[in-house]
Image 1 (cartoon, rainbow, N blue to C red):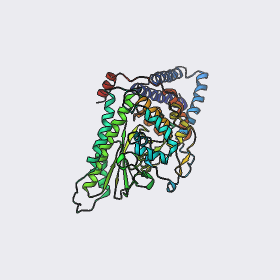
Image 2: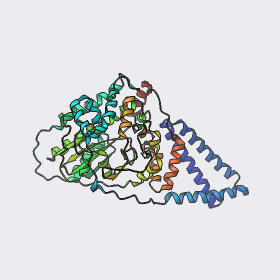
Image 3: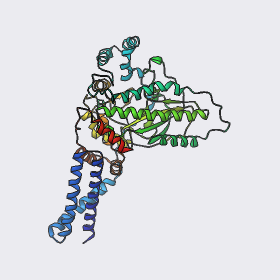
Image 4: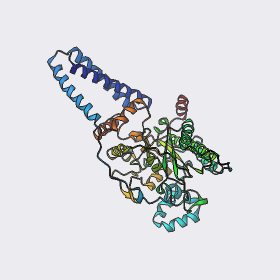
Length: 462
Ligand code: SF4
Ligand code: SF4
């Protein structure tokens, strides 16, 4: 048997192993279609290898081996090619800040503050009708929505309440003496990273705080609604907490909001501890957590080199995709910045469009990045999206669930992530594979998962 023959058999066997790894991932992620396809594919590859070995002297086998050899060789050469077309330059200097009063959560809240609602709608009369229609729908977690559950639903409500009520007491800190020794930024960041990873983060990034990272005007809390956001800190540290695939795969039912509220609490915990650590070194620091952000986390995480803001307008982490929750600490101190280029994620978003195809409220664009606030970026139609949330009583997350980047950090998905980083051909092939194994259109459940099943899966994780 020649070198060509050995190469073909080796390639077929490696592909079979890949299929078996895929089957393992599909089993763990409970994707029956993927399991069936990968087991069939693995069996087929092994069968072809056996047939080639058994009939290796047959002229047809020799011809097939020749064809497969060149095919596989071409595939390897193309797969390794590191090339992407250049993306248009972005000019951050021209970005207009976002007014938090325009955020859908802030507008939803105005129902409880009629005077602020009137003031807002004098400024934005075009938003009055849609806001009033949304106000008529049940609040998230209230009876009347599709996935309402009096008992399990109260987990998310309680978590969001905890975040809200704990923010002010946790942010008020007693004076501490300024340390005599100067602060060593590297050592301090290292300590913050240790705390973050210990408390459940999977990534930490640091960047210089830019004006466009801050909201222009506060809008989420009635106490400071309409006030200019004042934050003159110099650096921002962002913490990434991953959401569990075991919950997000049930999106848009109740487990989706259970997990997002859980990860908002976890990320807030880290931000508060980190802010306290800076404070103890005599450095002014502010924790930015759900409901109490002065900053927009997504561009900070992107600037810190942790990933990219994708088609659904939210941050996509380089490993966990959009299935993450973020918190930030801003500090009045210069810190060593983290870096990373993840333009390949934007190239993938251009061809993928899976979130747009699956969004039930058609809130995600299929088109190129439009320009708004002075820069090209994707964002969702927040009125459509939030109306859907209020109808179903959860934060939906179908887009997050459908995203090929949301896969767990298992060996097979690590291989695929490395593969799509190299060039557009790999990305097209990987997308075909994702559609084949996971389906282009998700099957959406119309009722909540059985709670005993969910509890069993949480216990298994522990
Ligand atoms: S689903 Fe596809 S298009 Fe949408 S954010 Fe994820 S990678 Fe981008
Ligand atoms: S959360 Fe749901 S409704 Fe909103 S953009 Fe994503 S898929 Fe669409």
